[in-house]
Length: 76
Length: 133
Image (cartoon, rainbow over the protein chains, first blue to last red):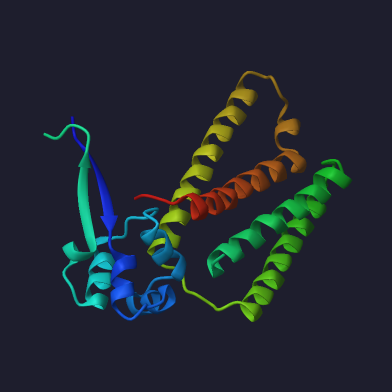
């Protein structure tokens, strides 16, 4: 049975590390709405690969430094 | 509440307003002209509401999440419309209802508004609860 993937992120932490960057500022930088940034931070929305890369670029880090995956349930 | 969510909220509320007038005050006894008039009234109300929202809120373009939510909501309303279409055909074929009953402006308007309310309502719920691809 395929294990369920849970995607977690460090967007809130990275915003804090970048001089308390606001959600609005990040949203404008990546071309999304503030609600989308809010939903990503709350784990209510998993962004597309393109948006994930844009967010990583906004913080100057790799995408894996922003998004982490965790397998829940049986693997393999 | 975001800009797009406010616009959808306006669509939903104007829909409910026109619906409650048509089916509450007029009790569904609508003519073709009332039907057209109510659709035009609803569009005008939605345009006025969108102008008011644009005046008092920061305009934001739709992004991928808004489009995904819209797509999911359209899917729900499309499937509902398909089921209702199937019931309509079944009602006609089984002679349970007459052609006149099934083509009355009141029924057509109720289905139209119902499906639209479902679409906008689904969008509002998904904006709040979250959405996955």
